[in-house]
Length: 186
Image 1 (cartoon, rainbow, N blue to C red):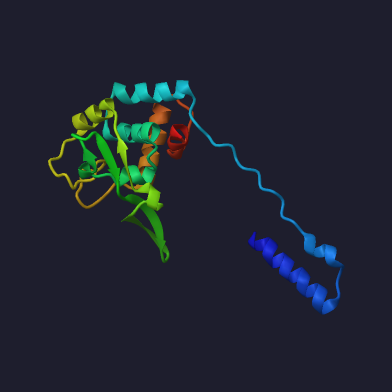
Image 2 (image 1 turned 60 degrees about the horizontal axis):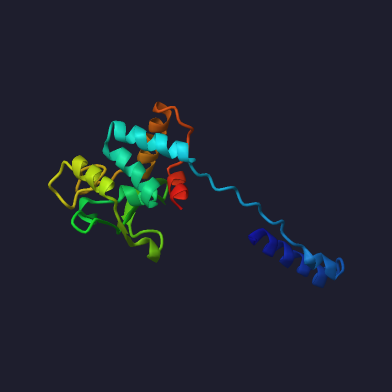
């Protein structure tokens, strides 16, 4: 769109200043972009993923299930703290996200509010997910990040993406991005 705006301006200037062309030059239209198909997991892949996680449960596996079954983004999962899970109400609150941003010539990991206002939300959890999370909880600190156990340092999203790739490879599954789990949920 930016390129088309500049092109139309240049053509108008050429028409005014140099009497180039007729009015039809200004009718230049950008080609319609083709939307890439949304990638999702099939039902057999979802079942294989779930079985692989439950065969040897760990926090990374729980993170994949949060993406697949509840639609959490990778940064939202990395930003979860134990205090965000209300075991008595069976709810999970999404209050923050972790992302890597450019800071001069370097990048840094930051924790901030989620992508949009509607991304701050409370999600009802299933009994199975609550049981899995309660079994995997090893810290007594409610302000600790779930995936690291640290009170100050969350897991970096690209580290979780790497773990996801390793998991898929280990279980002989097709490679996918973590965000594919969210698309599958949707």
